[in-house]
Amino acid sequence: MSTLPISTSLPVEHLSASFDNVTNSYKFYWFLAILDHVRKKQTRVIPVSQLTSCMIAQVWYPTNYFRLSFGKQDRLGRITLSVGASAVLPIDSKQSQVVQTVLDILSGASALSREIESLQTYVPYRFLRPFFSRELIGLKDAMINSKIEKLAASRYDEADSPCLYRFTSAPEFSIEIHPTWFEYLYKHFSILTGFCMWHLVAYLQKNNPNVPGIPSKLEEPSQRNLKHAKELWKIAFEKLEKMNCIYSGQEMMSNEISLDHFLPWRFVAHDLLWNIVPTPRKVNSAKSDNLPSMERYFEGFANIQYLAVQVAATVEKASLLEDHILLAKVESAKELKDMSLPKFREILYDTLAPQIQIATNMGFVNSWEYK
Image (cartoon, rainbow, N blue to C red):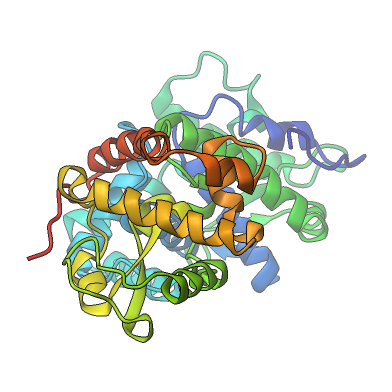
């Protein structure tokens, strides 16, 4: 999605240019905060403090929960992590809770509040820079904000090429969206959001190479879908004489288990069946979001996965083997069933080992063992 809806009365190309050659995430989240306010509040005057707090709330899950990197130069990601550490908020806090926390911090006088305020001194102005690219050529950095403020005010009432917004200080520092731009944002909200998210995903993929499921890590996670996993392991329990937990070694009863993501869900953000095994609830709770010791648990994990595949193939439940078929790059459930355990184990190891290393680099606890 590389183009925006055309308008005969607005310089849409300037808005599009705001997302060219982005080196920090603030442009994405500033625009997403504006869009969110337009959709919910339907007011053209928006306090900058409200937009800033919304930006930080939107970055909350990607940074604090999913541990994505926003790049070494990115201040918004660092500030969001600082808010979490300072306020001791749970990593799964609701967006409204984060917004209020940021507003509370801004109402006080602290190093963190000053750092958040520093976002407000350049983000609203620099986002408009493409609207005035010619006028700003050669201008010293210290003079850019004041120049943009004056240009935004003078262009606000232009009929053929109005600026997106201007600045106002009453009753507090705010932006005032131009009426025609407001109609454009409201009408094309879904397309504009998709455009921004498309560029944001590309930005995050660049800063998180090989990390899986980035599009799923941009907001609070949706409810997990374990329907097929439950069905697969129900069949396995019915067909196998007994099954032991790969972590604790204890024999499991089908009515007393929970389903564990071998690679933590917070890292993979998916429910693919080749990553899920049954465990006693107590063991699953103890493992939490840690990375299991490959040396100690991989062989047991591969063996129990192989058994489940064999059972599902034997009872002709090919629909439950789609994830494994894609993983193994075979054409059918029969090919998967005929695969030897060593070959299956090799495929699984080659998938898991690099992911374990990437997750370790992101800060997930490695080499967990059940005590």
